Length: 249
Length: 323
Image (tube, rainbow over all chains, first blue to last red; front, side, top):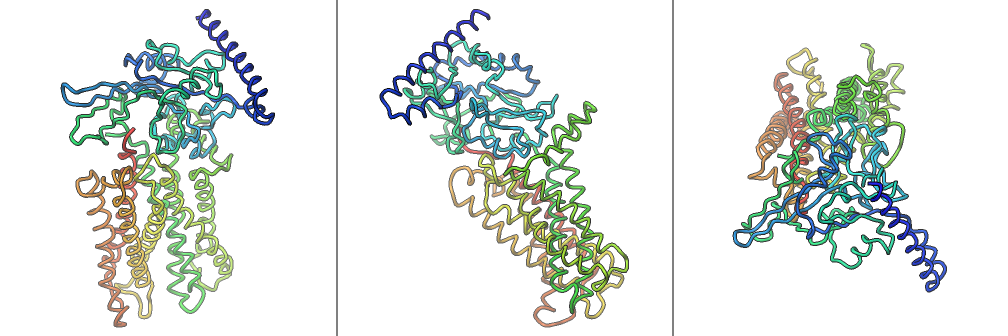
């Protein structure tokens, strides 16, 4: 664990050095104003999920449960199985899910107490359980069904990108445990980060783009099939959510 | 089956808040229209009934809303006073959340409806008593407050693209007219219950005014329902998929068309027209049995409740199509 932490800290240091060098290089080649703008870009954490590398093992779901002692029946992170087709032309894809930490979060817009907010310093959407009244408005408003009421606090709860780990230079628990390294986490405003490079070079997609939420969770080769929207009439499509609520919302 | 995060307390709240806000608005409107002038007697009685009805459903509905809060439920289970009163956080901030704006408006409306009812409370209250100036001044504020409470509930539900059934610009208007209609129905029930004769005294028009108003409000409500369905059904994607839940083959089709539209709107409106048209067209005396008046009022109230039930449930068992 400590070794991992050291490696991560070293990587973070290298990233920063890299960012510094990149900023310096940009400052040399670009006008002063533009260079300053690059330097001031705040951290914006994001996740890229390469579904080609996901084996549907649910280790991320379990790690998340263990990290936060998520109560039975609730999930901060989960993996959906998407099955479709008719034998022999069939496929089974895995779709890891979590809060999308949107740039335009509906949950924040509707929160009547300001308990849910997007942190200006890193873009993570968080809930303050001491302020939240548990009105469930955010649960209704989230297009990704990422929220639930925590039975202990009575307040809304959801993934917070493992804020307590990220703050110490570690990656979120789901990323740390992922066997296939399908989850990649980092600062998407840092051009040297793996997420920024993947977003720049890969054909990434987001979930429910039409909602206008601008998610910070990106997918590579995700199967967006939904039983309610089969592209071929009468095609078999089934989604196993592995949640208490079996159906996607 | 999808989870209903908002259940019966919220459905009852939407209905009761609409009833209270509607009664307050109707009371204020009728008072300003003629409560102190030539029609003083009958208009004043309608305004008085409306003013006395308004606070109770508003307070009970708001109380039910608190029961639905996660922190309140956790507070009851854990006997934690801080969690029981966590809802006070709503009033520690002003932001653009429809629920925050609505809470402030609702809080003001409750306080105001109590003060307004107080001006009518004395058994000797009449159109020209010593509280008449205060009463009329308060009616000017009560009308917009009542309208705001009725409309905000529709905006609250309609503000979410993730809930395509609710995400309609016309939902606020539907809730407004339903609130006014149920407000009139509540006043009609109280009026019928309190009147001593089988029919109103000669020249008394309170029952007639209420029945005509209710028929008109129901007609407008039906028009908005048609627009609400057309906006969704005649498009593609999420709204069309969501509205299918109240169209033939949908899970709530019978609740909506038989419960809300037929028994909650069409039947009472037809009965009201049957009794009011002779007076409206031929100036014949308005005659109606007390039991019929009460039945009409109860049907409209039941329809108003079922409308909230169908809309709250339909919004939660449908969602965006595709991932």
